[in-house]
Every structure is written in C-alpha cells, then in structure tokens.
Amino acid sequence: MSADLTSAALTTTAALAAGGSVASWTDRYTHAVMDTFGPPQRVLVRGDGVWVWDADGRRYLDLLGGIAVNALGHAHPTLTAAISAQLGTLGHVSNFFASPTQIAAAEKLLEVARAPEGSRVFFTNSGTEALEAALKVTRRHSAGRRPRLLALEHAFHGRSLGALSLTYKAAYREPFEPLASQVEFLPFGDSAALRAAFETDGDQIAALVLEPVQGESGVHPLPAGYLALARELTTRHGALLVLDEVQSGMGRTGRWFAYQHEHLGGGIVPDVVTVAKGLGGGFPVGALIAFGPQVAGLLGRGQHGTTFGGNPVAGAAVLATIGVIERDGLLAHVGELGARLRARIAGLGHPLVHEVRGEGLLIGIELTAPVAAAVAARALTSGIIVNACTATTLRIAPPYVLTDADAELFVDLLAHLPATPEEL
Image 1 (cartoon, rainbow, N blue to C red):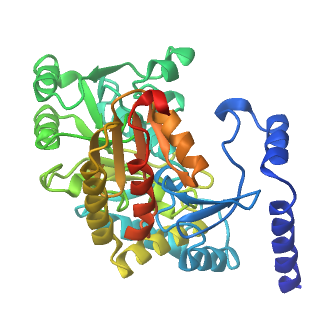
Image 2: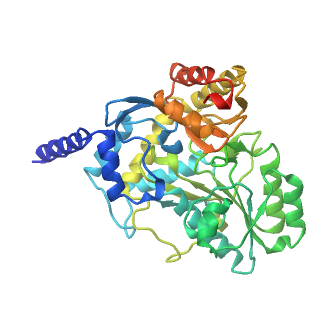
Image 3: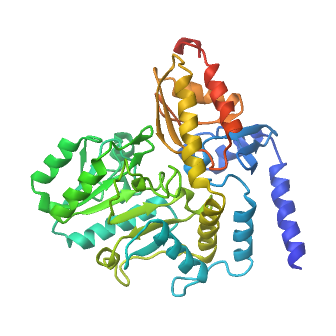
C-alpha cells in the first residue's frame, strides 16, 4: 500500500509539471496567488544540480539558488534521501517532545559556529523568525531599560513588523509604520559613526544588529576591522552584538559564517547569530544561536515558541546539508571558485562592469548604469538566472556544487553584453 501511495504521489506531481505551459500556469497564478511578488518570471517544474527547467521544457543555469538557499543545488540525492527517510519515520511532533535529529542538528550548529560552552540554539522556520527571536532576546537583555537599537543603512533583516524595524529601505518600512522598535541607522561601515553612537548614551543601547555581508543592498562586505570594533564597543557598554548571517552563513562565503573570516571578524565571538536560507539546503528552517550561558538563558520557559521550528524533518535537512558540505570539501570549493569567478569577471574589462565584490559565492557585480534589470532579463532569455538586487547591481548566489565550466557560461554572457546601456 505504501509503495502504491508513493507512486500515486509521484504521478500526481509529474502530471502537474506536465499539465501546462509557462503561459497557462502564469495565467492560473494571477487568479490564485496574491500579487505580492508580481507575475513570475518563469514557472519552474524541476531541477537537477545547478540546472532548472520551466514548464515549456527550457533549461536554465540557476545562479541565484533560490536567493542563497539551495546550497547543494536541486534534488541532491543525499539531502532528498535524508528528508524522505525522516518523513517516512517521524514527520512532526510538537515541542513538548524532542527528536534525535533536532538535538543533533543543534549540536552541529554550535560546533560549526565555534560557540562556547553553555551556548544554545532555538530553531525557527525562516530567517525573519530567527531575527524576531533575536529581538526578544535583546528585550530580555535590556529588561526594557535600554531603548536604543542600532542597525546600518541599507540593511535588510526581514519583513515582519519587528524585523522590518531593522530594515532600512523606506519603501518597505513606510506603509507599515509605526513599527515595533525605534531603530537608529548608522552609515554602512563608518567606524567613526559607530564610535560616536556609543559615546552618547551608550548605556542606553540594547543591541547592535549587523550583516557581516549585506546581501540585498548589493553584496557589500563590512570593511576590515569594523566587526572587531563593534565587538569592543558592545562589550564595553553592555550591549548585545547580533549578527544576521541568514544570507551569508552556512558556507556561502567559504566559511561556515562570514564573521569567521579573519579579514572580516578577526576572531570575534558574537552574542547572537541568526541563520536560515542555506541551513536546510532548500528545506524551510532557520535558527538563532545564542553564545554563552548568559545570552542562552534570556529566553526562558514559555517566553517564546514555535509550532514547526526544529521539527524532525528540518533537523534531518540540517544534518544532511552540513554533512555534504563537510564530506565534499565544499567550503574550500566555494572560497576558491568564488575568488576565480570574481577575478574572471573583473578581468573582462567590460565597459558596463564597474566593480565586482563579495565573498565566496555571494557576489555582487556593480554596473556603470542602472541597467541591472535589463541585464538580468537578457540573461534569463539566454538561459541563466541572476538577480538585479538594485538598479545597478547584479547578485549571484549559486549552489555550492557549481563548477568552473558552469560559471564560465555566465562570464561568457557578460563578455558579450553591449558596450553601452543604450544598446541593451
């Protein structure tokens, strides 16, 4: 009976995938799904490694990876086997109970984060939820007596009301104001401004929230020494240092976390790290990592909760994703391939390319004119998925299993772009 049901489910999935064209599915989308994201660029039906196919049977090189989510690519056999095996054994229990995969996944996260004794993990379903948990940690830390929260200009931390209060972009914030927290935004990477913020009423600061590499703003790593200064100032004034590694974490930059790069973090130990996206290789899971027993104890019994967070299948996905990255040496591969790819793009000397920046396989390509959307559309037509995260910036965040030969397809596309914006 079980085999029959499995076969029926696979048949249904295949029938849906074959049940229409991109145009027909897009039409159905417009009548069934909210217009929050606008019309889909394509309707995708399957994937394999770094490739995906749309409902018309056309193949695309996926250099966005679900926005830094599909760390192992699509349909990775180890990940799909782990998820399927766990779901076939025990799919969901409430957090009145624990499961071996939940516990082992938390232990593994603490290990790769190099968290000290007494650190703990709270599992969520997304990065936004992890950030919301971090905000509650900061409230408990300050006991309501430290009203100031600091973040950086151009930051993106999520779209729920709490996370949105830390997100800089006015177009995201203004329709929903007043927001849950009053936040002061400091100029990105400006050490003098950071010092000044702490020199005035520094004992009123509950937390400083940072992305070691800003992703949505166009892939901007913090300058060398900034995180070390942030750690020094927060420690001196009794504030928490919260690092949002939702996009940059879990190997995306060639280290498990971006703050572990010597030139970025200099060996700091944060108080809180939020993580999601690549954590489950495509399965929805996020986490808050609290460093040390004092911070780990701030959310006591009954002070936070989640229905699905840390469920057995999510734990299996985390363990499988980390296991493959370790087994296949993907951290080194990400760092080395990312460096080669950035050098190749910069070396083109193309008149439309102003700058290439990033860490590992989180790469931003700054253009000389606001034509990123046009270039991304041209790439899609040519069978390559990239993202115009700003008017002038292309972002790529491909699966870690990308090869040099795959990457060269994108380099070749850039090499053959028109020389002037007007020609696009």
